[in-house]
Length: 298
Image 1 (cartoon, rainbow, N blue to C red):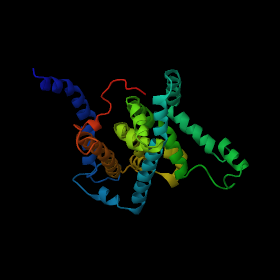
Image 2: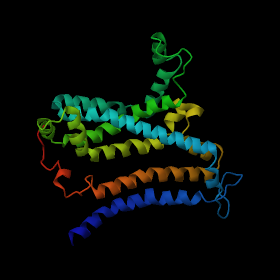
Image 3: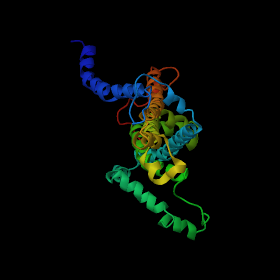
C-alpha cells in the first residue's frame, strides 16, 4: 500500500465523523430553512422562501450587525491582549511559565455558567464593581454596567481570552528569539523588531487564535442572554427564541444557516491562506520557515 493510500485510510474515521456529525446536520438545517412554517410549530408541505425573506427585516439586520461587531471586537481585543502575554510566556523561566499557564487555564476548571453569573453579580447595580466605580466617581451614578453591549463585550473577552493566549504561546514557543537580537543589531528598535520579525513568524498562531475566538463568540447565546438583555441580543438568542418560544422552526433554521455560513467563511479563508503560505513568494522561501531549528535559542 502506497503512503498516500495509507494516509487516506487513516483519515477515513475522521472524515466519517465530520460527515455524520457536521456536514449532514448542516445540510439538513439548510434544507429545512426552505420549508414553510405551520401554525402548530412544525414544517409544512412543499418549499418556501418565506423564512429567508424574513431575514431582511431591520430587526434581524440590526442583530446580525451587533453580532458581527461584538465578535470582531472580542477577537481584536483578545489578540491584542494575548500577544504580549504569549511573548512573555515564551521568554520567561520554565518554573514561572508553568505557573502562569496554570493561571491562564485555571478559570476553565470552573463551570461556565458559574463564571458568567459571577460577572452578572459584579456588574449588578448593587454589585462590588458598580459600587467601587461609584465611590471613585469614575462613572455616573445612574450609568448601568449590566444589560448593554459593553457588558457582553467584557464577558466575551474574559471568556475567550485563554483561547487566544494558548495558540499564540504555542507559536511563540517555537520562535527563535535570536532573530530579534539580530534585528536590533542591524538597527531596528524593539517595536520594529517585534512587528517586522516576531509577528510574521507567529502568523500561523494568530490565525488559529482568531478562529478559536471569533467562531465561538459569533454563536454566543448564554453570555448575551444573562448580561446583555434585550438591548444586546445576538443571533444565537434569536435562534433560541424562534425555535423554543415562537416555534417558527424554518426561520430558526434560516438564522442557523446564516450563522453557519458566517462561521465557515473565515475557516475556508484560513485553509486557503494556509495552503498558499504566509509569504507571498510561497512556502519554499527560507524566510517563511523560521522555525526549522528545533528548540531555537531564546
